[in-house]
Length: 290
Image (cartoon, rainbow, N blue to C red; front, side, top):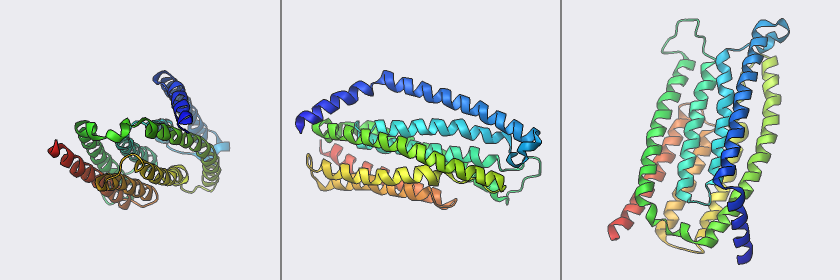
């Protein structure tokens, strides 16, 4: 068993070194650029060719497409970062949720009729304001969390245990497989619903409920698995509470993906605050004892 963990750990480091990750990043960015141009071209045809009259949309809708590719890359980094630190993994979750919020702005602004006078009571306008305010607050919370992590990083001693890190690398690899399988299957289902919605002139299906909802649900069980495994190497009440707070945050983030505005942002902020406060209290206790 120990030989297997060691061998796999070396393979993980070889295939997911910074150079290969950078190559994947450039590939996804090129796809994002290509998708952006194609989406703009499709909107042009829809707005100017009678055959595509049921697909007419604002050109602002195209901004949403490349941002979705960038968000996918952030989720991939979220999976890759699992072996480094559970605390850092939670911080990356904060980043992903913040980017999902920004992407919602690009998605919703295309539904706003910019040719008419806007009212503060307009539901679409209020939704955009919620997105902007929430994303700024999430950015501030994420920056504050990383500041705490930098100050208390030396206390995450369990991340130095090689066998535990090797197990997290295995989980990271499994999550990558799930990510790609779920991406392709969810994309095919979403595209079918998308074309059906465009033909009937209905609202677009929410991609968060199709892909990210399922992915975050799987991450909850992965968090629980790693929590239990971590007890094999280090067991304490404070470690249980800290890691349990991270699981609670993941659950709240998952719930936010299917909740309506502004309830979804309330769930996100509660999740952020719970993890940050638990992380601060527990690690501040450790620092005061040194």
